[in-house]
Length: 194
Image 1 (tube, helix red, strand yellow):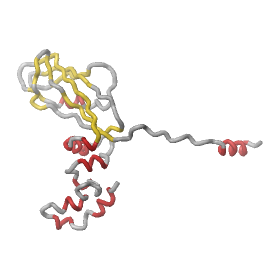
Image 2 (image 1 turned 90 degrees about the vertical axis):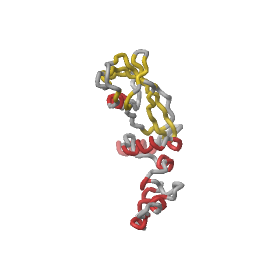
Image 3 (image 1 turned 135 degrees about the vertical axis):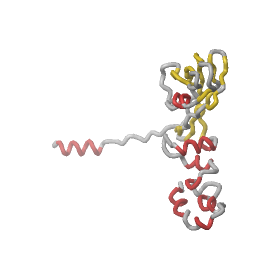
């Protein structure tokens, strides 16, 4: 038997592997909720606590807590920020930079400060509209899925026509200068239809 005929025989007898799908393909929006800031036994109120950017997630996940340790200088800046523990926590890369961008009241420097950030993951259809908008402004995990735009009543021109509002044309018709947009939104609705 020649090598060419052996290769044909092997190729004909190869059974393709079955397609494996995951149990859950639901899209969710994740966010980190900060707890109180404690320096020693004292609760310290921040002047401004920067929010951590939300992210898209596929499927369910176990809620996690990340604890950061830091100090506050006399100008109210958090410094020497480090995470407790050594294990990797997915989607936690932006927590320390968000804390670093936060401010506290200037005055006496504080040491031994800590804050817990608790992970919250909710289906897109139940996500807070402010989180959906924040994610859509900087989509780090891919574009916001259609169920997120349908959930967000202020989704702008990217809202699919299948949404309860009737699509882009219906939304623009409510604007004071609606005649400027007449006939210009049908193409957008058709291109974005799921």
